[in-house]
Image (cartoon, rainbow, N blue to C red):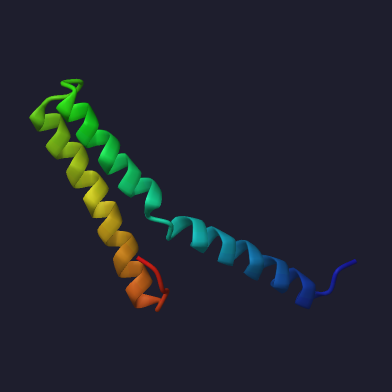
Length: 75
């Protein structure tokens, strides 16, 4: 059986990995680029583009603020 210290160590590893993945804004930057391509190709209209762009930008701001509050480096 594992001691409480080992369980805490495992939970910290899981938390740190989840935080690292959540703070990775590259997927949202890629989504923003893909969205622009769809607009340029006529796959979506201006209104839909603006709505989706706003959602992505809000997520990027949320990540940036979280990084600032928790003193996490990276952009």
